[in-house]
Image 1 (cartoon, one colour):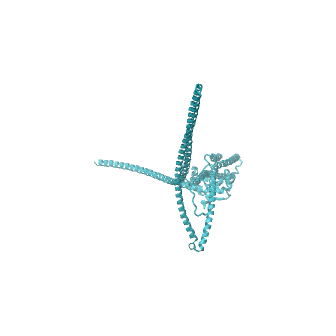
Image 2 (cartoon, helix red, strand yellow; image 1 turned 90 degrees about the vertical axis):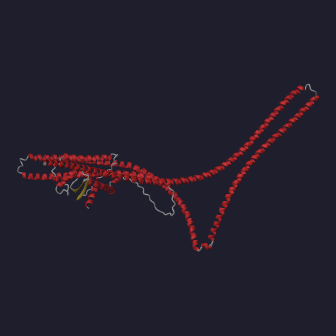
Length: 620
């Protein structure tokens, strides 16, 4: 029984332990999930903060743009209203003038139409009368011809009495026809007079209408004249009152008033002269503003053209630098050959004493002493070579950093030139808009002020001037480097990538052959420097770790190779070192020559001076 109870208890204990493990696992999973969710929440919060900040900035900019556009619209609407009012006034004046001219033209055309109608009626009447005369004459002619024929037939058979009677009859008929013609002419004359009377009556009616219109116009003009007379009389009364008050000695007061009056008159004359001067100066100012506008546009174009000129000058400087480095590489190759010859001679000298060792067994003491000294000298030369290689690597790092900084500086200068040209164009457009839309403000109190407008024009210096002005450029370029060094140093401190070393450099004892341009600026004296290297590769970190194990590691770099058990660098190692240096310099020069990267030139003397300044500041 007891064994069963113990077994049950053990099973329960195992179950509880398993449950505890599961609970612990679930708890860990929950904690991990909670941490992940918390991290995601923090990320989301940061993203939301950045988004809200960006949206707030966009909102502010859009509000400013909307305000500016609303102001522009208000100014444009006010200008449109003033233009509309002016156009309305002009249209009313044109309508009045056109209505008057139209009325005059209509009256003239009516007169012409009436005259043409009268002439047409007269022509029709004359045509009708002529037709009637022609018909009458044709009838008479036909009757006369018939009578002549009848008379010729009857003349032979008729007696003399009948002939006389017939002659009298013809005479009476002739008289009748003449009288009939006179009656017709009188009728024609009566019709013409009636037509003329009708035309005259029409003209009388038209003249009556014109007379009524002229009377209405005269009445309106008379009313306006009466109103103007009343206004003129009021103004005349006010003027008389003002003159009487001016001439009244009681109102004038003492002689002070006369002085004030004289001063007022003088000030009025001066005001008139100042107005004239103001108008002339206003015209001159408008002309000067136009000239300034043209100059700004020309300066913007010149700033755009300056970028291409700077690139051409940079290519020339890079080609000169490439030629200089090629000469240095040739010099290094010559030194390598000399060292190989010296090494071969040294090996031959070592082989000769080994062959004659049997003859010189008595001089073993001196040979051992010389061998020890030679070994010491070899160790010292190896340590010096190690220091030299370290210094070369440091110089390469500094040159690479300086190249990167100058590349950024050149890009910033290029962006600055572009922004300056865009700024000049925007200023020119702004001045045009001000001249077009902004009304001229009235200056109440004219104060003479000298105004000078500074134009951001960068004058490109030639290559000959760049060399003596190196010190000035150092002060100009140190400020962006300091600004860039602060965030870089903060980031490198977080990542534990900073290595601080104190390097004792003897510039008088060591001469670097690939950097002869650097040694010219260094004074021949011994001084301790504290150089701070950021972003050193893994080889330098390994060297620093080795230097920590050796004594006197924070004081000098020469102890790096003295405490290490590395073999002596051979000629192949030195050749590889020189080849690596040449490859790095060649790649930097080729990258700077390519126009897509726009990399600036690099002067090693400037970088050395900058490192001196930084080290002195840290020592102080």
